[in-house]
Length: 615
Image 1 (tube, rainbow, N blue to C red):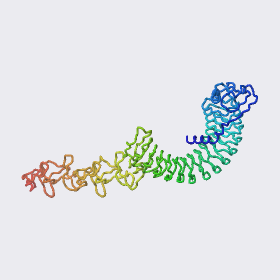
Image 2 (image 1 turned 90 degrees about the horizontal axis):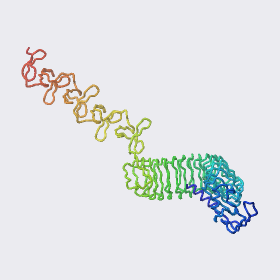
Image 3 (image 1 turned 180 degrees about the vertical axis):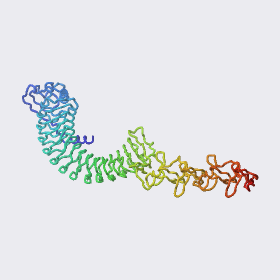
Image 4 (image 1 turned 180 degrees about the horizontal axis):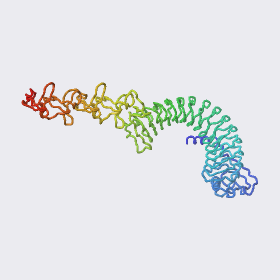
């Protein structure tokens, strides 16, 4: 919209002021269709100054198209009499009047301006209108156009038609040529040395030669297949649009007056605007630019450089900057504190970690998603109507002070966790604010589970103990196993773990492999004792349950009889350390004195200890 408005304004300044002169016409004898008359002035009415014989009736016979007839009558038959003086008709504005034919237009020999935009024309014959200076047939269905008989033509526009070729070699006075969005494959303006404005965007042109157009002020050639563009012979060039041409380079060193450049969607790797102090608009988005300096462009208010490879941008000297689009560059930081007139800022996916917009009170649109922001203060930006700060690290930010109900866009979620795990090539990396941190070794919670990160990568091969805070956690295959009840070797020691962490308080048994181990103070204990487990006392020695020994074991103040690893309540004798003890009801009875039968023999027992065999 900005570009088209500028083109129109420039065209008006160049040509329209000269297209409505006051003329004196001396009509000669004519046919039945056009009578003889003398007009003293180019009045737009059929007044008494026009004699009866110099009337051109606006009939279907003369003008078959109803829309054309209406356009002529509306413009020149102010009295509603159905006729006009043909010599007085110097201009016709007939936009959007459903006109399909301009047949009869040749009856106006003095026509200098014809505008018939947005109609249904498929062909036009202006060969008899030799005084035409301005012709605009934009947005019709034309496939051909012949202006070779219009040597006075200064302004020619036929944007948005289906024309495949145009010959303007006979139009040496041409100042303004607009033929965008057609089917042109070439354009030759070598004979149009006075040309000031050329628009050929949206065609199939592979070359635009403007080396013979030294007065060129504006050039619109975008959306073609132009690989090279030489504008070195156009020192007055003020406007350039070469968007989407596939250019590999753009040399504007000979164009110091350039103020407006649209050069997006090309393959340009650099552009030097350090000498263009009057630059106001610079759009170089979707290129391969890695560095650009706009510090010598103090008047710039529209700067677009998104989708490039830029790593640094200094806009501190661009105090009038209002529209700034720099998204999808690896900037790392962005300072707009010296841009108080900023209205639109789009800096998504630029790898920035902070953003201060407090000095931009008139900010209307802010899009800063997919960055590494941890805070964002918008209290000074009360005029915001569009906000997108999603995909940052702003979970703790409260934007309730903004008037969400009166905003067109209010996108503040989702927000990312400051720390997370990312899978890359089969490995799980620990990242903080989007960056890998290979120095980190710790336990990290992700999606409800705790993972063991070692040197920045989850170690899925690890089965070990990891200290977190004051607690040692059991890690199996890279993550805490909260269900395991087992032993874990750490260093040269086996530790008891249950419920995901080391248990140093329980005195218990723990099965590990095919054995049951006696646990005390969190480790295997080799004490010879009894251990209660699931309401049963088991005999342990040398660190694990002993189910083979038949013996006695002191536990507390009593000695218990052990068989099959548990307390056995049989009445018998049990040998321990070279002596035989009398056991009854599970333990040694040191109060008993008497005979005891053991394996068919009778033994005498005194105070629980066997003394001799009786028989």
